[in-house]
Image (cartoon, rainbow over all chains, first blue to last red; front, side):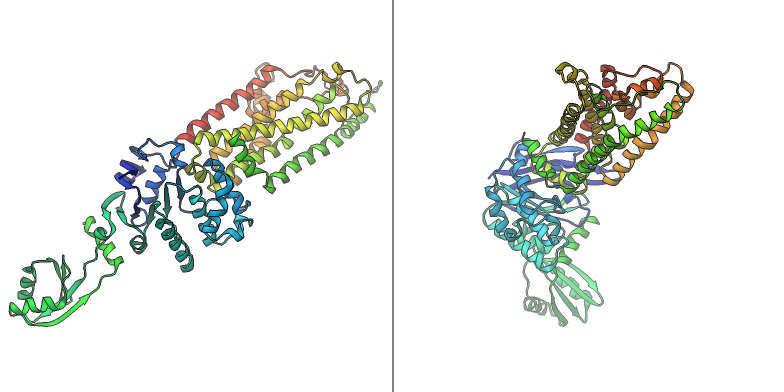
Length: 299
Length: 275
């Protein structure tokens, strides 16, 4: 296992707002690492600090096991917030500037333009591009010279559905090539579709981090009602994989730590001589789940 | 050389750059063409009241032409054009956010500053060089005697002009890095050069007509004073005091000290600030 990025206790304060608070993370080679959090949770500030755009107040970080320098930044491909290019230069000329800074020769430019579907428009000026094309050019620029890691900060922000689909396909295609990726997003769905690992951020703190299927595991809830609600509640609480229960509008909403089917519950309760008047499975959306994760840690 | 080649990639295809450079040389050419006419109109006007008429001014023979052309090329209204170019080239990096991208891609902040200093140096050098060529051509056309020593007597004015141009463009570089906003930086820089400083100069000068020369240390004034007057014999007689006939090292050192301090401030603050 090889560490691509290690962040240790990084902090940044803007006036009264603690944008990033003692944040620590490890990104290992080959991971598609999602940084998930609502707007203002410190994702962009964190990426800004590890890319030398923002000076941290305290803490440190390492790239590829080394202290950060401009030389190891040349091995990183990054798309930060908005696509930043010279409006009066063509796509190809803009990429030539990037290649010169990264000490690459120009031979890779055509490849990344083809990968991102911009080859036909390579001689058109950047300002004539649609937003989706600008964003793809930013990805093309990040892909120049086959970097060891690709950083994408909200890559689908502001794109239309078609643009979103194009960018996601592109990321998956790149990820399939084995490159390590860090993807910052406020869209749970996006992280879940693309990432293998995730850190959930809120107010500058890491709430959870780990493999996506563990951290973002979705447990469904089951709605129940019976004539004797008190007995029902006591019975549910005695279930071996019981997790939590709340009463909403005369219904009990129970959550279990394992997969529990409504039929199993019915059988379990009948053995305790409770006859249900209502039984339904309720699928939670990922978005709801994400919001609940945030709420749990706030209270 | 790598940094300069990156800068050239940014600058050479930029139309605005060529338009402003073109305007600079256009104004300069118009100024040169009209200068002789205007000065002689003044001389004619004065001559009507003088018993012994002053000779007509000749601006373009050696060695006076060195001083005259560098003087016209460095008056406030002309000097402002290259400064605007420098401001636009630097603030563009902030408004397009390309400075962020450059750093992310592996340029250090010091390299970014250094690349802009190279642009300022190159621009000052090229303008001075072109002016030198123009002076040589115009001078050779207008002068009768063409001995080499006669031609090169006041060559120091071109070096003085280069120092004027370089230091003034460093002022522009400073404003651009501090304000980061094209319109604001151009407005404040132009306003300062053309209105604010001359007004301050006027008020400082009036009560201190004697030896105290605080006003000569104002930043833009210090630049202007490197080549303070044109060399026109008729004008010397009119103004009735000794005009400069060489570029003084002291006059050059004042704007150079300003420029050095500004570069230091940009270097220190840019390395600390968030992008």
